[in-house]
Length: 335
Image (cartoon, rainbow, N blue to C red; front, top):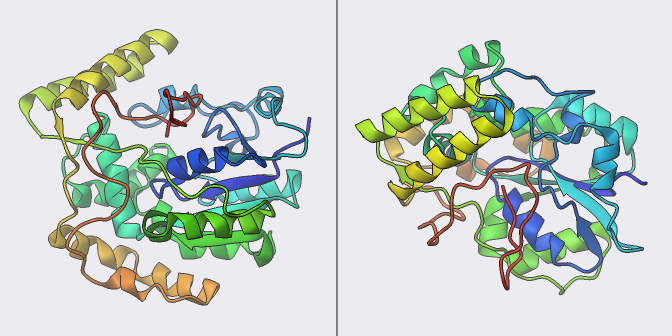
């Protein structure tokens, strides 16, 4: 069975879940039922240890080749096959594995303001009860220690947003005409036009899909005593309890945390000004590598933008690496 024809390769917290769902509605495309299989992140079994909740995430990796190929078994004849693992852009070894296995693959890359991306990433893990620090700036300062301790890439709030370094390496492997780079804000503000450009890049009919669902909306629990107790219980359970038992406890505690959550708090200018220097050099590199202007990412923003807002009733924190489950009348996906 053939490998995929295209990959949504990055970046995390840049609308890849919503994009995956939108592309799955195109009759000429077939997106894997598991949104984030992570196949190319390892040469074999994934690690078993890491930061809070990492072991649970590693168990969701589709790392066996037969299982990965099986994700595309239901692709209609002639449809282009694709999957979305937003860590492929960040992981240089994954880039090399993709090139070795699928040298003619087309890669789709979504770039989001790196400070806003880091804040959204931190909010995701804080909301899930896994992030022990209640401030994004302090959490980012812990990144070198966490990387040295083997915490999984989703904890690399700053490094994941250094797109200049990532694209510079990617372009040593894939010609630019096989890499489609665009901004997250384009997907939010001009979904029809952005989706048409992606379809044109993939070589399938345009004008077929025009909307992007509101996916993966992250709420924000307050830093109360209850949140601290539930979060500590979740982190301890995820680390100590095996397989399904640990997963069931985590889902139960995450549900209780989300019941107490409010809409996501915007990024403050004080936080943004503290984090901007961490990305300034890479933004300059990104402009050099792409030939495009990203200087607006160095400017003040009153609030973080994007597909955020009040979580719809009944919606919980979404997790990647799980099969897509369509709700009645919608095309839902985890992520």
